[in-house]
Image (cartoon, rainbow, N blue to C red; front, side):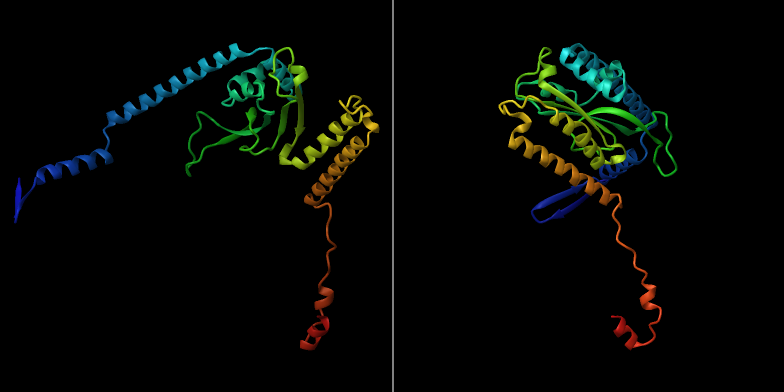
Length: 273
């Protein structure tokens, strides 16, 4: 059907059948999609997952071919420190989304630090079914992963590599150019982990250091002594802060009943005040 509306200077035509079919057709298609479309989307989704899995496998193998003496040095330190096999560490590293950070760390004037967290991470079962509230069963599992240290919560063990210069890191100089260390912050107790690392590892190492570079006097030098004193003082501050947080220092509890038990009238309150 067609209705015409005539006005001075113009003619407006409205095809109600076209509008009706357009509106009806679009809305029904949106609300009631054809079953064949649903099946097709599921197939495409499954194919997409398979394709992503293939790409991930290719990427892993490409990265495995890049592993050289520098990577093996990092892998051996990590395996010794967190009690994993070198094969496990290698497989984890080449699967990590931040693998490129390792190459940036090796590059001339590259990253000054390379961090790894080893801690519990929630893992979702691939065959897990949804709960009535729409959530899924997530299980904590210990994972090793590369991090910048600024996005993930730190609740486990941190393994770190530090560069000593801006020189390019090669397979022949990696043991001289890169320092390795770890500190444990299990359950998120960062102050305790840092206190232990400094007091039990770094300070004893510094105090036994014989070569202080341009400072020929070594430990007899006044600046060196002041530096070690400052580090000792800092560790003491960490210890005090940790004890405060752990409620090791408590204010004496006051039995207020002694003061309010016999208050009967306004003059008693004034006296108590």
